[in-house]
Image 1 (cartoon, one colour):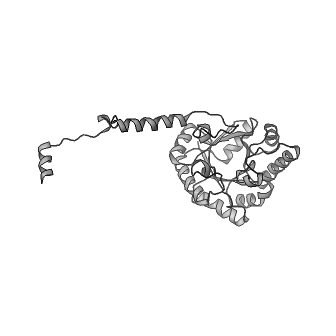
Image 2 (tube, one colour):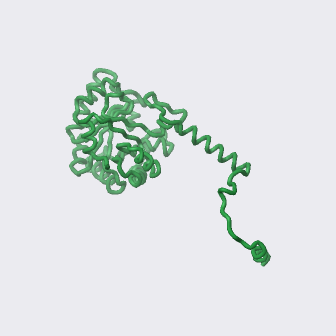
Image 3 (cartoon, rainbow, N blue to C red):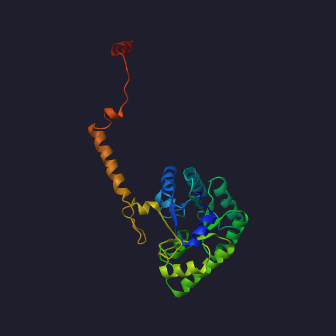
Length: 279
């Protein structure tokens, strides 16, 4: 059954934890969709895990649309959410609506995500008025990494926690149907989850959220040197891939691959072929 905005709302009401993973390509989307995950987020994290950038700031609308289009082709049941990259919605409300529309029309997404709280409520209202569902994102918002002075946990003081709660209430009032809470104390995430009627999706925000999201490269240990505190390794795919690549190289160089089982045969008259070669 296709996951929708209403699915998310019902899951919060029923206490059914929402599952979300990042995704950036067709084949991975098919595998994740077949697993039964509720939602696929084409995050601007693709800049770091797919394109090799040091942060998310260089990701363009064209990058996001390209990857969202691929993911939407592979997702039959999961709700596909396209991330709005840095400076695709901050300049003006009109710019925000236009780019959100592009993610739906050109990318095939069913919803968009943008970072910020009180400061982006005008954009959220306008995008929702244009019939585009919006997921908000507060706490550690990677597009603000320079303003934060790095990737740091947010909401650790009473005042900072109060500000996050105000952000959550503001974006709910503006019309967002869900909110991602990133890298905030579990106790603060619990307060927010109880304060708003929309689902909260945690990443590094503890167990009290209505759902969870992880970058799939993290949970599969594809980057052995990058292990955020909040990530659990659910499968060491990185080790499996490295071993497979090494075996391929070894067998190819030794001549073990390709074997007869991996080769094609044909019923050819060797004498006739030799004669052709002479001509």
